[in-house]
Length: 370
Figure 1 (tube, rainbow, N blue to C red):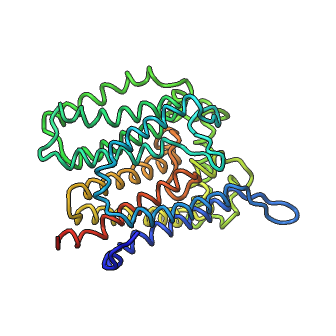
Figure 2 (spheres, rainbow, N blue to C red):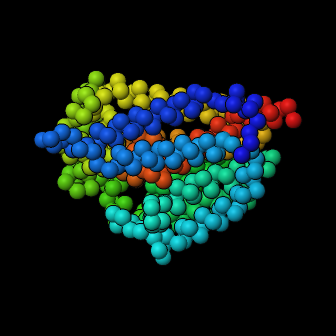
Figure 3 (spheres, rainbow, N blue to C red):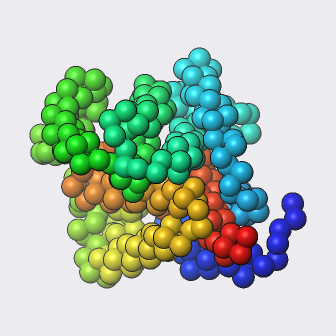
């Protein structure tokens, strides 16, 4: 696919570099989290090799997302939305069940999670709709935009995957706030959302209710639902200021810490690199998000600005919820930390979305000239 060479001068190199640094840190952390100490040396679980493979695929996808003119996404927004709905419905009939949840489609050479595609679909459709709205959203238009997210989120939550379903709504909610709502809508939301939370309790599965109760007091079930949070807090606390060193964390190496390669990967990082290492990791994430703020501000065209805002909230909410979950400040909802947690489909989507933001950044000056 031909590309104007001038675009190469407008690549946001800090964003690209930070994405690669975060992925390398995640791969290094995963090597430690998935390693086994044996008498004859070190054995690494296949998670590490798979993550590297997914990372290479993700980087290829990132380049592909940088090559085309992102404005063409407007034309495929609705076909992508309906294709995603079909894939999510297919999960209920031919999906693969792992850990008691049916969330994956078996493609033979890999397992694909359509809920990750739903995140891309909601931000592209959301950007298309919101870029055509010239005024803050009233009740009617807000209901229309929210309906798009509720369709996708509802299908995902039914899998069940509450964490990803909430992520979809949070991405769209962030984009709506970025666009703006009328004062009446804002005041109503301040009252309605907290009032609806008790009603949401009735629709939660039993294990989801236990997670919320153990979040409030993990000691009520220290060997059951509260085990994850307790072990995570012990791991991070035992790391101290400087950490115990690479592959020297007792909680992770002795297998006390559950889901150490996925949801609680940052607990492994905190135990091995301590408070200093954790703060450095969060600094990288903050700089990563800051670059997106600049790109959204400088984008030539509302569609590009809303796309970038959607990607920003995609990463922002995952970072906030996962770190809060690991520290015991939020309930365990199964949301991974971008680039750090293991996940094939998530890694592919993460890099593709970075490529999309780089696409917006690369074309900001050419739009101005045209």
